[in-house]
Image (tube, rainbow, N blue to C red; front, side, top):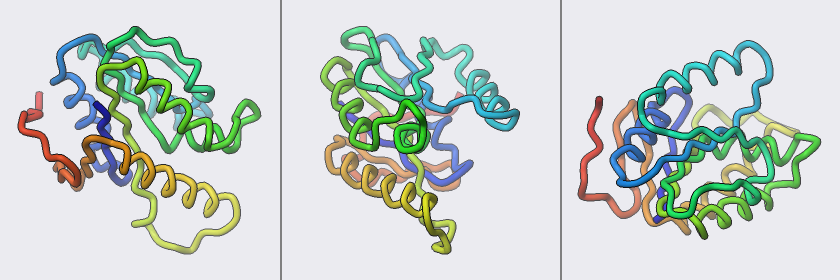
Length: 176
């Protein structure tokens, strides 16, 4: 099973995705793709660590080369997030381009029970971008479209509320 959770900045998508994965039976793996660059990034990473502290996740820090991530067969995997992973693959010294993102997603799908990918909705904030920023946004939008087409379920988080865009599920994800 493959679920995508999309939303804007601070929409509640990460919190929702964690609750969603916690509602599934089985082991939980959290793949964190945000490289710890600077104090702001470290603060965000720490906030996310605290959010999932008691939720039973095993955390794997993986910034590039997702396809070679070793995960237990049949686990429920939460990838946080596609935007960071895409930027890392596009701009990091170790990056192999956005094709590596798709290869990594497909490798995880081959071994996991359920993959949940958190991604960013990037075009609501305006359109006055150019150069590398515009290239990144266009590439992330392309990956979002491709993966949403492949996903079994797609949910957009708007103001903290889930709006199921594809295959609305029947079980409920509740707040803790």
